[in-house]
Image (cartoon, rainbow, N blue to C red; front, side):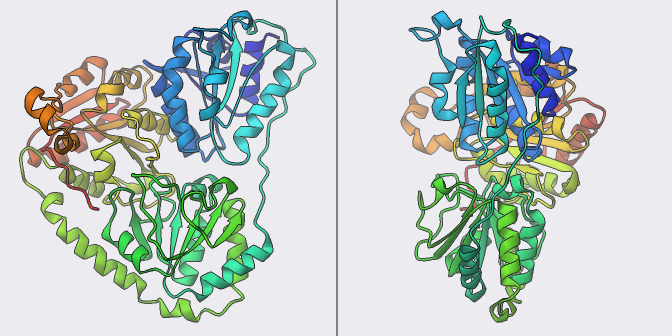
Length: 542
């Protein structure tokens, strides 16, 4: 058996169903021989984004895999790997490498060396007979501990080497650990005695599939819940105890309750300081429950900590708190009414934008109509960087787990398209949507052709204001002299040329019917791009 075939067989044994790729890489043919579907993209970064979403929507149970050419292919892939690393997403990256005799000198790009700082694990395959141990390490790293990209670089002169015929691949498994019972008891007492606790849930809840445990803790103890952008949809946002979610932009309920809190319980989150996350107010008692101790007291000072799988942690905490006095919880029975009052006032203050009849169209009006139109339990939505992220995160209401792909620790433009396509492949029965702007489509828009060619029927919502609008206030001179924030294009025509259903919408009266036509196109199996001509909206709910 040759190396390429051995890797493909290991992938098959691990349940890999799709290989995202860009030629030339021998694994593409080997995977096809194993009936692993190969999806060829127009640029490496989009393929990595698709693998990223595929892993996320499957909570890491099924792993997204991407392979590419040595040299320029690996160089082009760098950004996609870095994005997955920043968001702690388990993907397997298998670049070809220069032959061993050429792998370690200028100017050849060595993926193992250059991507070591943006991967959880990176190593080269140095000989065919090492494939059993290398693949074992790779998949155990993917399935255990903090999620993150794993890279195996295969030099060109290794692909056709022999692997021992006696090798039989054994599927990897995930081993979980829980927190120290003494720590659980201490945290339980603190949380039960809190007057105004708030739960801040991150994407660790998604990977642990601990949605029911989170809801049980919140409901039993009348604790309001907010989430990070990555954790959005971990708690139903139509629940009376939901504060909503956001980062740079968020509902007023989030900051109000965090500001008024005495204890903040962060679970499955990193508390990483980022301009695109919600800041934790000073002077609060912070409890931090996370899988990776590296995050403890890295960005914010936590008084108490629980290390372990989120599901095991919440389960242990619920059990421990069941023996404690619930007086404080009973005193919080009015919390849902307060949340509702604050939310309604906040929404009313935004009504002029959410119901705007202006032309050019206000993007908030489009999002409000979309939010009311779709079946939330069967819709997965994601955003792109910049205005689309800040406009959608506060106002989109998630009702089911894994129906929102949030991100923001790094903000590469063009990420959302690949995420929506990867989500659709993971959940073919869901409506999968990406919301982006005219700047983002300039980065990855060619991969609308991939969606059409590979029969991936997503709905792409594009806000075109012919400008990088949020940059106008910080680039006044260059804009005045040289028009530096101006951009242009007829993206609906471009999408039609690629084989997508597409239309351009300029009248707010046409928003709902256009959305219905776009959704209908996806139900027929055709990707759709709806290009809304929008005003230069830069106000956010901050």
